[in-house]
Length: 387
Ligand SMILES: [Zn+2]
Image (cartoon, rainbow, N blue to C red; front, side):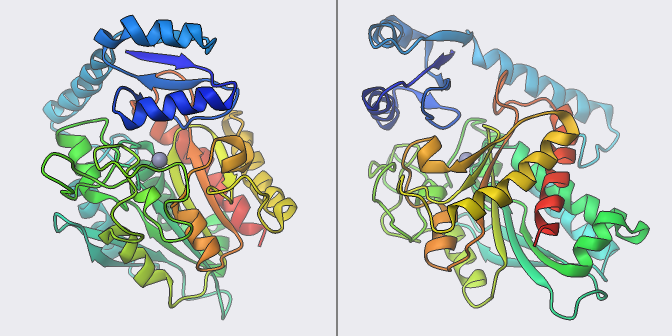
């Protein structure tokens, strides 16, 4: 079942993170202060978990009694799509890793003047980590550079779908001018549509709620939380040293192929900005994740975030909250955006948590691809144009 609770004080946070580390429950959105946190647990546990939340005054409210039913409905849509035999476009279906790989190759072949596709490394299960570089041959002599990654957490399917939406918009609309031309004439965009291919594939084929990568850590535990594995202030809070936990930070900083692939690619280059896309929450986060101390130039970072968030809101009216992730949520160390800021010194490093915030969470309907894709595209364009 899926239940909403509200952590009002430090004690509540500790209870939730302890229960998560012991695999008694699964936190869907991040633990954030004074606002509802969605936790999933087996119905058999409700006899002790619900009274515990009541006793602690965490306002437990039932959201879905049967999450499996949601998963079955989602599965039924895919089966119906497959049965119909007609191919579904990238904006009408949550593509598998293989479908997404094929699509990226097709796009790179169709737009050779604008797109270059390369593999920046291999996963534990030997899948390619694709990076597509988008830029035009005209415009500025020296272009600004952005690194965007999607799908670091496997079950956050709206993230890779949004990445693909943005790639599709820029490539198909460049010739007609407008924003796509403005961006590709002044920027090099280096985009990783799925940073965690193994986990993403596993979430499609075996366990829809899978979050980590698929490295075999010990006999019974699989997977490292890639967004706790990055090497700046690694293992300094808000991550787990228990290999079975969903927030396991790995055996050492940058131990994972996916993090290393990013490190090898990003370190020798100069970057204007870094954006990483998760779901869900409707937040545009600045640094830091590992500490609640204000990041340097916090006012400027919030100003930039607001440009993006306001543009997003103008499309469908959905509001984002902006600010430091540790201040809005709780401390979490080893995140990619702390590493790009702390180690690579990219001042403009941000983390977005895409919609939707309510309803079915990760199990978003297919219609969310166009809705979230369209508004996020507008937000990213406005943000980039502000440089
Ligand atoms: Zn995430």
